[in-house]
Image (cartoon, rainbow, N blue to C red; front, side, top):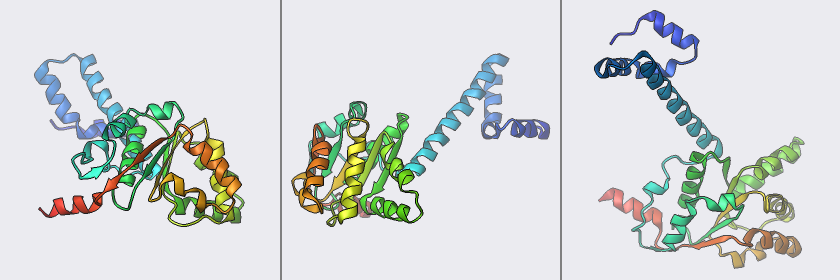
Length: 248
């Protein structure tokens, strides 16, 4: 069905232009199904609600730094890696966020730690949670830069307030004195208030030696690892496995 220019302009003025793409189809469906005016209006308005929710989730994904294609549904549970698959599936119930517990994803390069962390973030955003995913190096760089323009408190708050903060690739190199203090501040402020997910090529037992100050290290790690879900992934690189499958 053809839409009049007057109707198009009215819809745009009401900031409902998103319905224009499906309105002809909905009009044809309403005529075929003999819908009442109220039923037709409800159908069209629900389309707009669904569209806005979809856009809202997309925007949150981008703001949180999440890859929209790395989801639990796409994860290859048949990949030849050693991991507690039942624990993985259990984590996607997201109860750990409600309980303010943490998750440590440890294992060698390429086994899927970042993928799983991203998938958890994806699930949390769809559940309406505030999420931020950031590489450790970028986190420390952001806080360092914030000191130069006197926005440190605001930058620090940005890492403290999300329901779930994912710090990716933690422990690639030792932390200097300032980075150790920054990490400590984030962990202490989030402890018991929000969930932190960390991916690392090092096991949690090796994290102590990364810190400049052993006292700060013990204090931070005690809070971080206490009651945390520790997921160890071992085996062949998950990225290499996916690449080979694409070539077959």
